[in-house]
Image 1 (cartoon, rainbow, N blue to C red):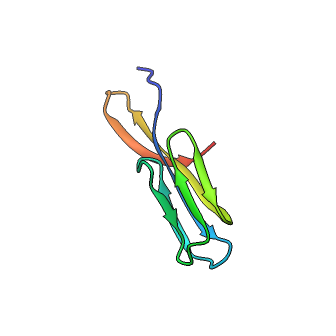
Image 2 (cartoon, rainbow, N blue to C red):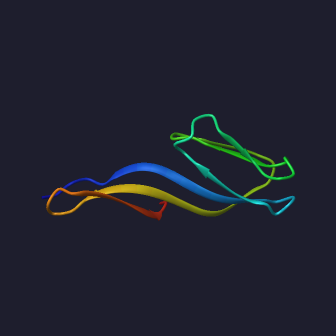
Length: 82
């Protein structure tokens, strides 16, 4: 049984270029601008776009993918974003 993988969400781990704070942003949280501790950098990660303020260094970008096995059972995995 061939099924197409389905992208569920994206997760970004990023670091502020000013204070070196590390934050995590998820694309499933609508209109959620994540600021660092000093407030000079931020990331708003949406399904179709992302918006940054200040100096945002991307440390890790992964997509949550829904897959199906040969029995039709669904499961989710995190994999590096393309």
